Image (tube, rainbow, N blue to C red; front, side, top):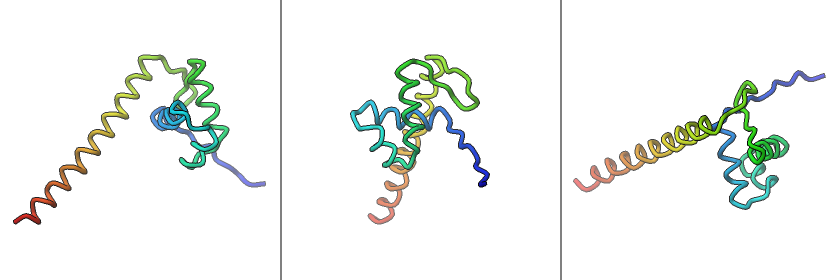
Length: 97
């Protein structure tokens, strides 16, 4: 018998696939495109619809915590985009000299 380890996903990682589902993509297609297990994504979407989202460790997550988590994720994405833009501008400036 093979020992398997259980993967524990953070709330931030769970929110992105749920947003894909809300955009109209099927759960199975979203799971395949993101490399996730379909049943896990289905459980996350069902919990989101019922307002019972749980983070790592199985703790219930309040609406305020969800918003804070969403804002942290958005801030990280914007910082990454800003870093990419800054690096590309620096590269472009070097080429212009």
